[in-house]
Length: 184
Image 1: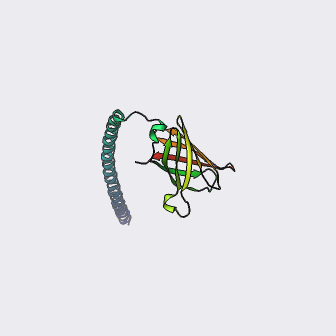
Image 2: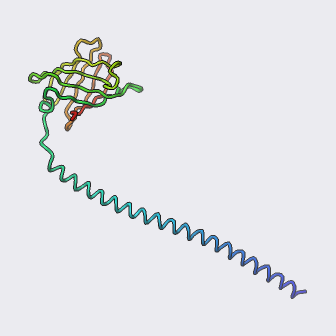
């Protein structure tokens, strides 16, 4: 009976061990698959990294060549001959204020005095009609005002690089940030 009991215990231990070995084998297979997946992802990341390095080098090379080709900076007066159109964006400072695009066209120029048109939201001409404007260039500052309108405002912009940035100020103190670039 003792032999039978020992034999039964030995069989239980052996079958339990083989089940454990089977579970270990399944876990090892899963881990190997995960390792293979991670190795593939690493390989892809290395290739992408190399591509990005090449792109960075190309951009650096292009940047140095464009720096050499840049023309001398123009003054504001040189940037605004007659028939110049500037286009850009505006955004009110108050929460929920209106934002949009607008265009300014210089139609006449006499010395530092300019005349032209101001068109807010060119895609919505019915709601935002074109306004006549007058202005003056002083160094790198452009000041514009509407002509024959109920709402009076003053738009003061300064040259920054090849763009104009500033504010449109209304009589009630409301300010609208504006930014313009010469349209090509």
